[in-house]
Structures are given as structure tokens and as C-alpha cells.
Length: 104
Image (cartoon, rainbow, N blue to C red; front, top):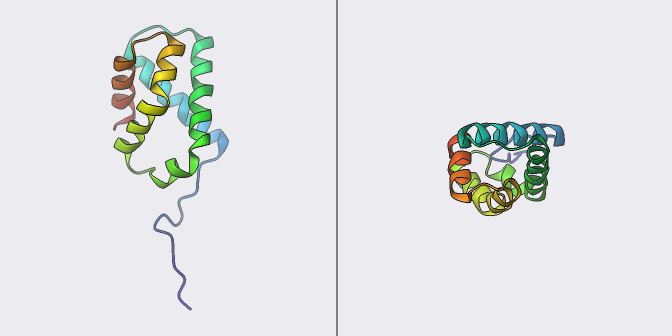
């Protein structure tokens, strides 16, 4: 009997806790590159926003986990504008800081 394996066999979707931690780390790295103060309360709200967006697109994100450029493009479209508005920072530098921090 031949068992067909998924090309990502052995790669499990991350846990909700793992996703939350990854979102937190990515935004922390982004803020460091942005070099602009964001209050702890707004950071928390930004992490929650990012987490909800990731959870809402988890299957697609998991399928494309190895394509950082594509994931950055998604972030710039789906997360960046709302996050820039929430944090009251210019969108273009925020997107550049995320792309630099994320590696895409």
C-alpha cells in the first residue's frame, strides 16, 4: 500500500499560544526598528489585532509558512494599515520596519 504524504508532512500548525508569542516577538522587533515610542496598552492592542488576523487566516499562513515575502505582503495589506492607525505611526515606515524585522 502506498501512502501519499503531504509535502509539509511533519510540520504541524502552531498552537494558539505559539501564535500569540510569535506575533508579540514580531511586533517587538518591528517597534525596535521603527524607533518610535508606542505605549504598552497600544502594543497589547496591536498584538491582539495581529493575533486575530493570523488566526483568521491560519490555514493560508500555514500553507505558505516558508514564503516570507508572501507573508510580508499579506501583513502589509491585512495588518499594516490598521496597526498604523492604532499606533498613530506612518504606514510606510511601519511596513518597512516589519519587513526588515520579519525578513521578507
